Length: 218
Image 1 (cartoon, rainbow, N blue to C red):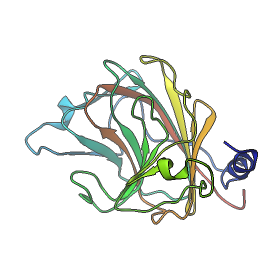
Image 2 (tube, helix red, strand yellow; image 1 turned 90 degrees about the vertical axis):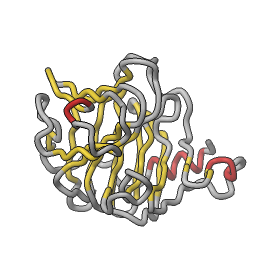
Image 3 (tube, rainbow, N blue to C red; image 1 turned 45 degrees about the horizontal axis):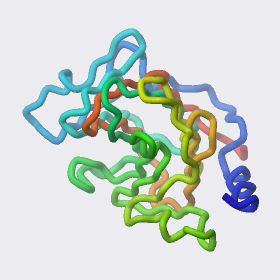
Image 4 (spheres, rainbow, N blue to C red; image 1 turned 180 degrees about the vertical axis):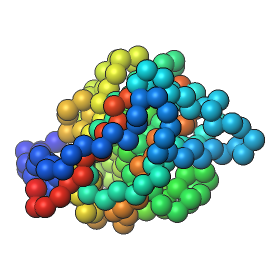
């Protein structure tokens, strides 16, 4: 990554300390405040999602997600996750609105959690730009709906906990994995909606899901 691009990313909106109090989206023992959505209507969500001792567990099958009952705009979201079996695919969805925009998935911006690809953007019924035009290899960074992250090796080994931070301010989205800046997008066509966690094929655990509203001119 060029020095100019690095500086641009570090100056991206949303890096200042937020002033508001954090909101615990997961209470550690239930799905209170969340609504499950699955691709199969005949499956009990309780067989897919379970909560105990501060950990939210997901079997990964069938595909689907849980979404917050509340809608959010301008915030910093922190999510810790780890794989509990063979690592696979998953993601955090932000600004989720219209259901079934692409199969079971709602209109949103997906921030990828897939093993070795955490931090990629996948647009779902939406659009976003990344600041790489003119950088060598740019044409390889945008692959249809997928916008690759800028950094390899930010994830911990499978089975260990990772932390993703997603900072959404207006039409920008900044992503850090384990404290390392991995992606930045601007001109997002969606800027407000629910937060969702995916069930997408592989068993995964989440904990410490915290959203801090951003206010003022940070």
